[in-house]
Length: 338
Image (tube, rainbow, N blue to C red):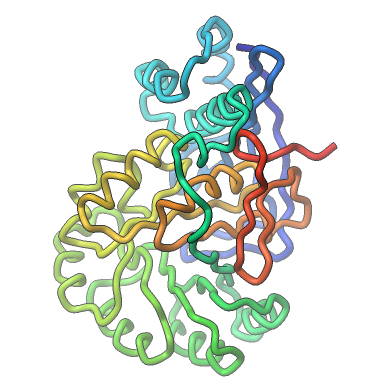
């Protein structure tokens, strides 16, 4: 295969703030793999504050792997993922970008979207939420009114969470999902769940820190709303840990290490009785298109990342009023813009 890569600064429409971080620009890495006249692209964003993966670190590792990648003849993405795994160890973000590119390339060689290769149908797929990040209440209200939507994810983790939610509820009858990004205690989660259920909230995502396993068992038993694992469900090995602590899992491709392990996680999660969801970063349509191929496996999806950008660098799924249209194109369907 031939290896190329590109870096971009993705500028957000609004400052994006969650309970532990805030930024206006998202750095991202695009990996391109070529073989037999076809090219596939994949993406991994930078996350130095929580997961510890920088663009510079990913490029350094990618260059070290260049001889290995360029000597490889792709036959199927799963075998390629397994081949690279011992060399990448825990470099999941970079592995994700490589794996998406390999899957996209494979789909183009086969001449089919990935979901058709997997014998799936897009006839019945979930709607995506639109994210309202933390801000002053008036600004959060402005953001909501700026983007009318039937389904919102509200980022919380402040001293005024209930007040924020009540003010936003005055503006819309849309369904709310809450993402606390590990900011709450067990007691606050249960208390908030009862109030939020009456405010039209569908579920609460990752209320407590990753390692709060004992407390999450208690929360699951007493919460008035379903609780979904995000930071607590990073890779395949986390599924058994989440079983008695969450009602569902939110898989992110960068956390898992790509489409290949994410798909395995979703299939196993279904067998275990979890509700399934895939989320995204504030990423371009390259990453979002990869998420879109997994839609038939999902109960819920959060794939609005590219909608939050001023400068999307690619085309991919079309999303209007929460409804997702996946282009009938080989691979993931993403194309870098000129």
